[in-house]
Length: 222
Image 1 (cartoon, rainbow, N blue to C red):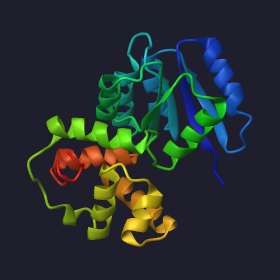
Image 2 (image 1 turned 135 degrees about the horizontal axis):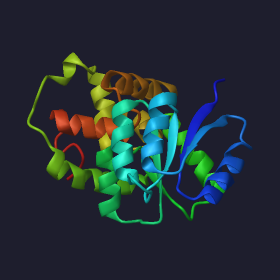
Image 3 (image 1 turned 30 degrees about the vertical axis):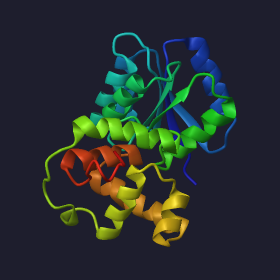
Image 4 (image 1 turned 120 degrees about the vertical axis):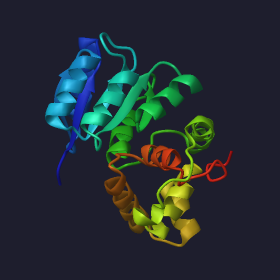
């Protein structure tokens, strides 16, 4: 099974070294590069196309939010997981807009960090489901687009059903129960959605749907 390729982006060498040591103990994870600032992180992401970027939000030259935005432009399928000391809606909304798959507080344990990397690598969002719904509702208020091209030309009806439930902060298990599907089927639908949209996480897919006008404010529970 291919390893999850991770890029570490943090301006503190000691923290990067500690994180590298932690991740290299896991058989399914591989650190492919390190970056000490946002500019370097963008370059490595462009050159290496990692599966996951573990990104500090406060970095020299280019901050984590702007670096995330640029990384998603050069490597759309790379999932960016932000490390931050700030548990604040304003920061998180900025991260979601930039294309981050989620965020993790720096107080998180090593086990939580490893599991979060695995989660975003498979397309899940690392946000509490209730927080996801609340934050997406906030984002939707100023990202909501006019109805555009028919989603049927891109996504199937079942894929739209899955996307709508994801926009409400439902987990894969909750979506499976609601639609009477198996967990592998739900995951397969997400893979198809991500590939068709050129995104790397469910949060990005929902924001894409909002921008296109495929999802309404009602869909995300506002």
